Length: 170
Image (cartoon, rainbow, N blue to C red; front, side, top):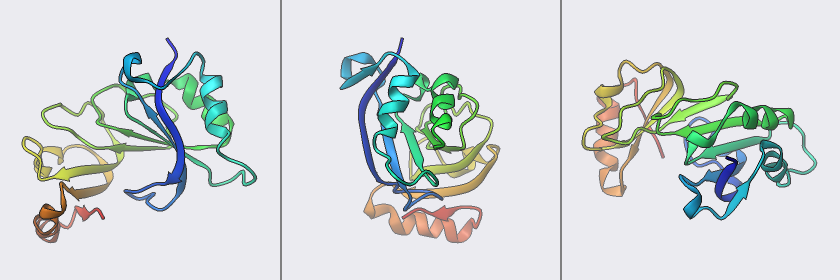
């Protein structure tokens, strides 16, 4: 099988609780037809991720996003062996591997979220078929509304003011 990857880059994480942290971002491809790279083993992918990190051995983070159905326990174990904090961004529609340090769910309507718990829920707002009330039963430590475009910033802010369980994402 292996891992199909669109890109691997280093940058600053842009949302949620870990906003502002330096991270290596691995963007998976949903299928092999659109990928830029293919890694046969978790060792090869973990080694490539770690090429981005030099010197500092603590506070290193990798963000896994897109095509998260490819993410498995073997890959998580290899990344953890490199002492990486593993953040998984997902729509929550596929089963998740164990061992992930942080799960960030961004639901996409009309798909049903199938995860049972996450660290943070980041909901684009407004979104047809995905009102925040729909996710009341999903345990999450943090709940963020991310305006779906600048024209929706005031609408999201108004919702957060009347529903203090939600925070406004920048």
